[in-house]
Image (cartoon, rainbow, N blue to C red; front, side, top):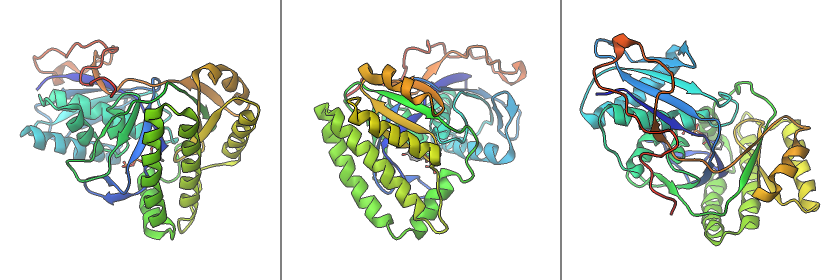
Length: 348
Ligand code: 2P0
């Protein structure tokens, strides 16, 4: 074993994942497509702890609670099984995503952890197998293994992974209207939706249909069609979620006001389209040349960040996140510059 550090970025889905075909293997009911971002990274170090009886998890410099540690430890069991080893580890994770606020912190978190842990346990996984591994931590994490626009295939354990898709260059304006942890997790909420919404089967079939259209639009470089599908699919997802019994609502009045402002900008010639995940924050896709002007208009609604397509999960240097000397074995950290993806192929 060795000490390794990896970095991954969140992704925002343009065709959403909401519902599982298999809860244990985290197989989605339908495929999805996302943009991995170039900001809000999670950086995670995995260090051997040969004498420890339990895994230790530290999040942003503080010990994690029992629930968080159990989820990470369950995930690490998958890595240990793959590696045929049983050592416990120390995991130190630094997160620049507003945790729990619908900006997909579990995606960057498990993508970084999968990448660091696989290397720490000397597993040499292909990008496809790394994506499958990350999926076992959190479904959307499999998409953050890939750079830029990525499609996550529905399927069985072997065939459900994410991979890059060729797509036109675009920017995303993230409007953060609320940084609070959401009241209900995506995992619980999507389970409740699947169990109670009368619209769920229509959602699954129409998502597959939209994904096919989205892949055609991406390959054609058709920004307008990408945007139309993105906004329509987001609104369908929130309609579906609101049809859960009892109802769940993630969007608030400010979220709706941003959708309206973007529609108004569109009428005035700035082509842009809104989406939102399991929280009130809104992400707006826009052509690079329009990003600055639109971002200026959206500052009225919250903190605004313009992001672009980012790298897939990759090994990196530790950058000062010290690991206690007693927990480190003799092996040196893997020294791969943060800017150079270590395990990713180019975009298709
Ligand atoms: C997505 N979301 O496609 C959708 C849109 C939230 C709204 O994927 O249970 O945290 O760990 O597989 O990945 C959030 O779901 O759920 C999510 P699990 P995850 O980005």
